[in-house]
Image (cartoon, rainbow, N blue to C red; front, side, top):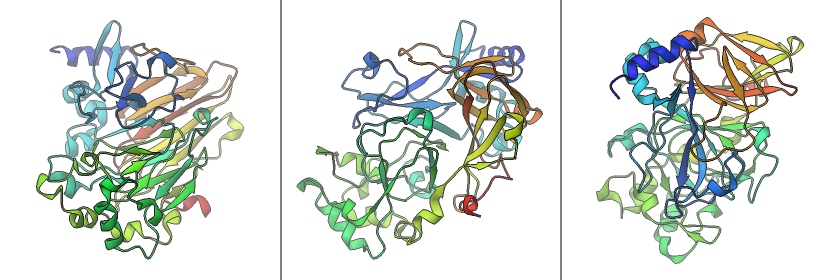
Length: 407
């Protein structure tokens, strides 16, 4: 669209640096929707059963979903301005540093992160996400990610609210090679070498690349790097076969039959870490003591991956009739999970149900400049106004470290 720059500038001027975003729905052909992310019951297969059920909603995304048979813009968020819609990716490309800040634009020339709601009926296969070095071999980027389980969306835990992480200490590489050798024999038994942790609403995890994990069935808010690479290492889940193509799709073609190579691709020390929970589990940490003022901002995703802060996230709760002004260190994507009110002059309302293709008033993108100047949140409803917002690399230098919640 030739006039994206002007449309974006007009929208930013009208709303003081805040952009309204339309819902972005993503299906997965190999998963079963959990049906808790507000989509109308008739619309979970709106794209056809051949594409799979919709079990993800992506936020402030400039990242493509690498689904087989997907349209060329699947996964991309769209800005809504009047009757116009245009991709957030194009808006960032046109306005660059004005949108995402000088440092991120200079280093990445894109918005390099995104977040989503993941909502599945049951567990998904034990899998890993490739590192940058590994993903580069197939022309992609690696994907560290993080989890937070919003209480507002987790009244029901569905079939298996437990996640397997890593591998039990003492597991050998040969044990896992043998699992991959048994791929077509039914369940390859890889979960026999792992440990499941019970998931608790209101908590989270930080998951670096090359760490095996089999996410459970809580609705998960997932700030992560802007990539969709993965390798599934479990051959069968809940009686359903996992195609081996999902194991190898993001590895070099000449390594697809090399099970030793596929096991060597794992971060072995990280997977068999005897203190795995201590090094990855997250509990919310208040940013400041503001409860008496009628609002609380909390860190929900924090910590570093290989010494780098790649993404962080906060949860803001504003009491009925209250307001607050908050300054942040970088641009962010915001999703409202409870209540109603305003972010600046932009209306916020949490929908009870959304038809596929319908616009909502629950999601926005806030530019780096606007975030730094301060954004006023006001609650005009009778219940708390709660929203989740995630940030890009190095936006929050004062964020806590993993383990700080215990100190």
